Length: 257
Length: 257
Image 1 (spheres, chains in turn purple, green):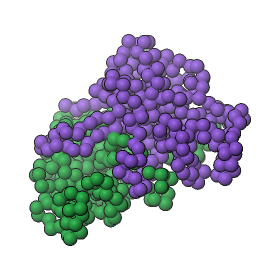
Image 2 (cartoon, chains in turn yellow, green):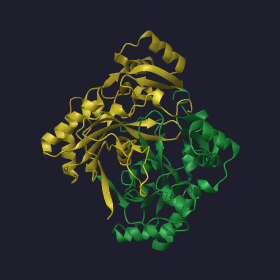
Image 3 (tube, rainbow over the protein chains, first blue to last red):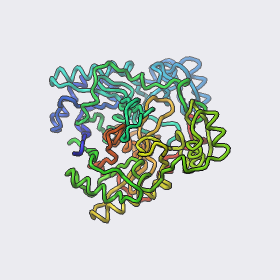
Image 4 (cartoon, rainbow over the protein chains, first blue to last red):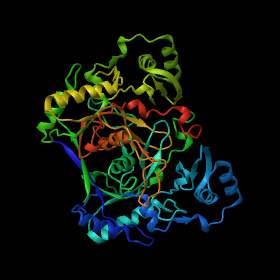
């Protein structure tokens, strides 16, 4: 009979400050909201609260932009502090579109403005960077939740991305712990016994998108989703989110976009 | 308290033949599996059963490949019938990667092999094309379900895509009826009263990804998901899936991939 999973968006987490124990707040909110944490649950966490808890905030008035940041800021109509933040996170600037910098960051993600975000930060001159090592952040939250509850869970950390070829944004995975990155159907058989040659599904990104349907957008403040019913996606194979990074040489859309 | 939605994968649909009334089969399976259809439900349907019901099957032994199909087939190691099918669906071949054709189809989608699929088709020499007009197909299923149940529902039709920049496939929306394509947060305020300038979320693609976590992969045969708890995504504004198509001129990743 029908298989089912459910996605709960937690609404009672307080505003997050540097040094906050996220695992504790997540467990408390899940209890308060009668969601609870069970074995096999997957916690999907928007990166902003992780960045805040880790103090990945920069106040533009307090950083000194390098010469190149000042030049690029002048050329593209951004503030020098914002561009300095991008340069600190970027391995390479690939393109500038309107006032948007498309970069490869030093983690390897191709992303807009190096993942730097100015929304939902309290101070007007502040912005948030991605967690320094999002997989390590996910693992820390995972272990914290397991210590507090005794339950075995997976954790995914997400960010919102614009995409090539398709309009509109979706959430993608930028960090994970204890969760499968992919489901590999290559070599398996279809309904009629034929070999499926190429099916290779990005489970982690599907989880990110599924969670975003309840996660905090705009002023809503729902930073964490608890996914129940997909325990088969848990894994202890120490997969890393960097497996999602497609190098240009292996990208079949090279030259198409 | 926590908001929640649930995704049910229907497992008892029979094999689909040309002319099948999909709406009827979906309602029957949802009743048999005690899922039911409620007001505000969103039905997410893998395109293959829609294509089969609409007879969008080509037997390669019965179609006559044009000269160009024979040439391309020889050059890239595919069968002439398969390439003929691609040419019938394609507006433009953008690239050939290994043995894979990246095309813009005549609907406007940039996709692999023009969306033509050889898995889960019973005859070895057959392949499936996308429904001719997936939005119309979705609307027909929607009206059929509404007529049978008296409930107001939305319908999304999906296909599995490889993506630029990120490894692994996810499901995207290729047709819809009665469902919002986007959620537009531009101009709204964040938690601290700041204007969110650029948030524009592709709800339809998030629904497709969320459903794929239960939908049929490989030999599993789960072709339909019933999403309950996201009635706020229903809409009667006659949005079309073509709104998801990003033209090259507006694509900030142009030249980056």
